[in-house]
Every structure is written in C-alpha cells, then in structure tokens.
Amino acid sequence: IGQMTSQIDNFQDAGRYDPETGFYEMERHLVDVADLVNRIVDNQLIPAEKLELSVTTNSADNVPIINADINMLERAVINLVDNAIKYTPNGGNVEVGVFLHANNDDTDKLIISVKDTGYGISVEDQKMLFERHVRIHRKEHKRVKGSGLGLFIVRSVAQRHGGDAWVESEIGNGSTFKIGIPLIGDNLII
Image (cartoon, rainbow, N blue to C red):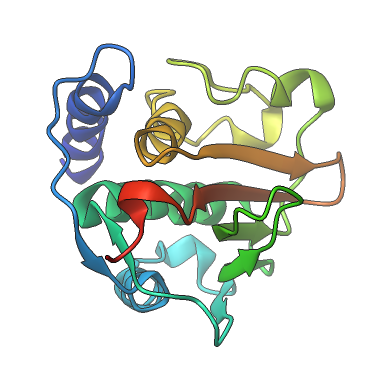
C-alpha cells in the first residue's frame, strides 16, 4: 500500500509542479536546507534488505537560509534519497550534501547533492533520465518499482525555483544527482 500511495503522490506532484503546465502556487518560507536534508535522512526508512547500506549527510557551514517552497524541496530531496537507497547495492554508501557553488557570473548556487555507490548510468541514459515516465531498465534493478516520475519531479522543483537538476555518473562508479538553486531574486531573504 505504501508503494501505491507513493506512486499516486508522484502522479499528482508531476502535474502540479511541472513548470510548463503546473498549477501549484508556490508558498515560499524561510528554509534551512541543511536542516531539511538532515531531517529527511534521519526519517528515511531503509528497507530490511538494505540494512548494510550507509546513509550520511554532509553540509557546508556557509549554507544560507533561503526563501523557498519547503513542500516542493522536501519532495525533491525525498525522491533523490529514496532512489539512491533503491539503486545502491547492499553494503554501499549514500551521501547527501548541501553546499554553495560560486558561478563565473557571480550568481552563487545552493547545491543539494545525493551521491551513491550504485552501478552508474551511461551517458545515453543520462540524457533521458529527467523526462516524464522514463525509467532505465537493467537486470540489477528488475525488482525496483516506480512510475518514472521521481526525477521529472526533482527537475520541476528545481526549475520552479529558477534552477535545474542534473546527474554526474559513469558506469561502475556510482552517480551524483544534484539540484542547483540560484541565490537570486525570490530565493533570497530580503
């Protein structure tokens, strides 16, 4: 039942959060993203078959409070952490981080990253990952269920905050999924 509820939530959120067609009205509040990440990781249920999986957080000291939609950010981070847990083999590691990245154009970005020690993703598959209803099928993941909407939601949340989401990965070396939120405009505390 929990998995079915999660899939229904994904279908609803995909429609609501979509930057092109979504009708969701963002509600911005002050958000301590490092605290949000710690809370999500602390509350994340790790399935019994993954008890040897290590899930940790690592946040920089200089991460500012931002003006963002906490419900959207929670949904995006939960999707990324849940995916990392599902797709990382037992005995592996998942590290969730929050840090600042200075851009060449003087616009700093707050970065949320979820790094795993899974199988990695080919360059061809990376190009499609954030599209609606896309799932990469591999024999190692045949038991993993999903709607193919989780990463579409992650990118939609990032885009609704003026940012983006992407993955850095190579076959055999795990993956790092990132959300970048620019520290400009409505994202700043006035």
